[in-house]
Image (cartoon, rainbow, N blue to C red; front, side, top):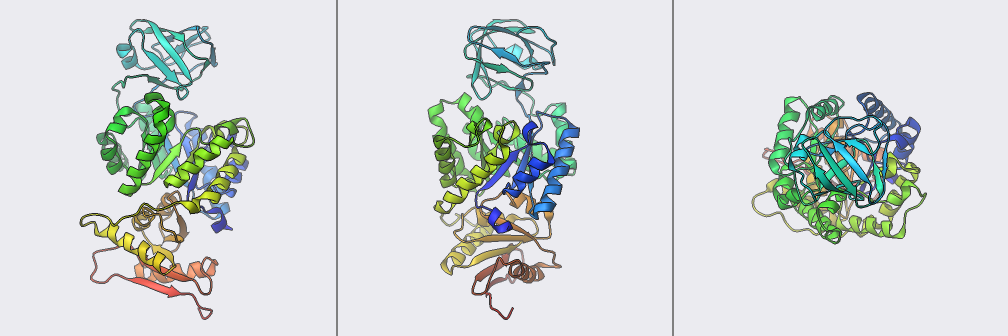
Length: 469
């Protein structure tokens, strides 16, 4: 049952009003979701705490580790609090005020960001809703901006704002984000999504905070600005994972460049051994439709063939009418095409012995047509193996539930909980668990190993399963 649900390419579903019930979250887990995302720009601590509780209960029910990813707002500009949405038509005049919230004033919305009011000038255009709504500044004062609507749309609370052609320098985290980070770490989130990353020092600062708070979460950097593209290599090297955030990329760059940028980011991540996720408009039509469009399916297939680790459903599951159906369709597309991924593989350069060991394990396993079983305490060896996109099945066994949850969204990895007193015992118990669970059957060959450590002798076992076991 569990093996059928585990795919090579992993699925993360965003929790929101449409998917906040225990029934929907469990249904998505049953359909094979590998992790859940909570966007901390929306909702309250009480709501997030309830989501976490339901996700952990669903994890126990389906018998698979489920990753938790939480998105921080980061150095972004957002609409403040509105009592009700503001519909906008082309030519309408709307007023932004320097405040956290407004009442029921017609066509007035708050932006609690003094830096925006300092930097914006007449003629500047701001975009919201991944560029769908555009407003041109026609009058600017120190605490009010009059905008003329260029496109139709709706202004809602907490919507991200981008100034076209400008990157306004903002603090990395505000106090609300600090509280959200503390919440995520105290609730054992596995990945922290950092929005609007500009440079490697942003990631280093977050990692220092995580360690300072006594946390263990990995940092997933969102690539969505011109600065991030310019500093891509250093950001990838410093991050634990990368998210290709196509929504804001499509605001900062011409739309026709997005496929090229997506491919470049994915290739950089795979070459560097860093997990990479893709989000925004995967199956957007399913917000209102029970099935995706043909073009959406082609887009998802292209991402799969590029070698993406994770596909993240956002609005489809957060606010859509068909959250479970969106998961079903995404898993269906993945299962149909993930076997066609062609590894772009070459031996790691230089003296990177851990990466070379992982490369050698993959090459050997493929040459003898064996499954790979890794016993790992931190998850690093399994992560290194996944980098090379093996054509054979990979199991990662560990006594560390945190590591298993982190690995649950990594390409090709099927996590397995195994308790053992040491690495040698771990290999034996991993083999026994795989046989007992029917993941290895008579005649199967398994290559068993653990992470390369500072020991004079390292074990790599090749075992053929027989009826005598």
